[in-house]
Amino acid sequence: MGARNPQTQAKRAREFAVKEKRERKRAKKAENAALRAAGIDPYAVEPEDPTAALSSETELSSEAALSSEPEKTDG
Image (cartoon, rainbow, N blue to C red; front, side, top):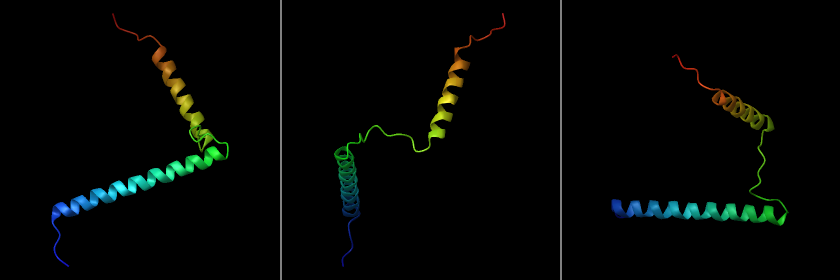
């Protein structure tokens, strides 16, 4: 087997990456289609851990409360 040109190797790598991306996209579309067929909205995803969502909401609300307080200035 002969030596391969580095440009050819780069081209093959790009083509392989595009092929993998297409396959992932097709799989994702098929999964979403199956969810829609089952009557589930694929984009209305609930968080896997409900406590994690609640803790992030409380962190955001506490940060909002801190930022809503007027800044005190010396002067």
